[in-house]
Length: 489
Image (tube, rainbow, N blue to C red; front, side, top):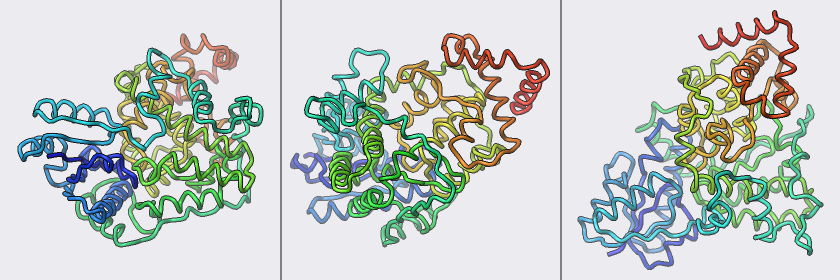
């Protein structure tokens, strides 16, 4: 007999397993998705609601479906594989789990128990692993810009007839850095329906995961079925798309979503696919004559960064997760879980995160990761924090983004420099108020720069900053050292 295992991130309307003839489906609330960390309640609720919906979707297609709750031992694929081997199954078919731990467990256990295993390409991404090999294989360092240009040419997106980029350049990133003017109207995020699936999920979370982090209520509901996910995309295209490009990197203290699509909660579990998002987006942009800066910026996130991150994970994820270039080893203070660090941008971001389980990429990179790196916090502790609190966080997302992009803990496998800044950058891009937090932030910035001087001196731009520091008075340098040391105590 054949069986397939469906994980919480494999809820595809057109699942590749459907074409294999397998009729026995095991839908599992795998511990790596439900209990590995005390995940945000909204994330658990999203998984529960979407998986219950998907169970009914499979039943409507006349498949034989077995569903294992997180509390049942057989929700763990390590137990499930043994069970299947002992109950007459000889062949397991799965879509690529896009998770190194799960893939390793599947291959090792199927081999141990004499089960044949077929792993199919996943529609969670545009590229197959074989496609990714064309860029990543044999390299020790990866450059997103090179990969992105390759993708544009391969897919034929935003190209002129001569295979040159529309608008004369491949990236309009420099046009994506405007501060949102005061008084600009920002549409509210279109919350999905509070249906039976979501209400059951809330009850389930409060029964079994009441001690987890975060708020769970019906004021914010992320898409948990196919129709809702497609509607969420259309809402973004209609209301926010034209403003996405200019304000992509902007920050507003009291707002979580701004002009971002907020598609990743649904996209990263398969309820909507990148292929569909790209097709629909290009249609809309043509129909509505969307500015190229917004269109290219959004496409870049999909076929550039998202696909690139997965490629880095496949080819270098194990190296990254075991790296610590800066030798940062401070434990994560409890205040990073509660939002009481005393640093305004950090605390306001954590408050929004506990409420929504989401923040935009600049809050993740230039607020949270930036400050955590300056605070010398251990990379694995930071990885756990992101995995726990973000609704769209999965191993393939967070290993490259945390150890590589955010912290430079991998020493530069995918980035040319660490993303750190003084408070000036945040003030430039946000409406954050001035305050004592700036002195602390800047002290940590200069402390980090001088402590890692031997590295930063090798870079022209960062060496210029060190020369600025060298011109500070002895008194100012002493204050910087004192403020930084006080923070570490």
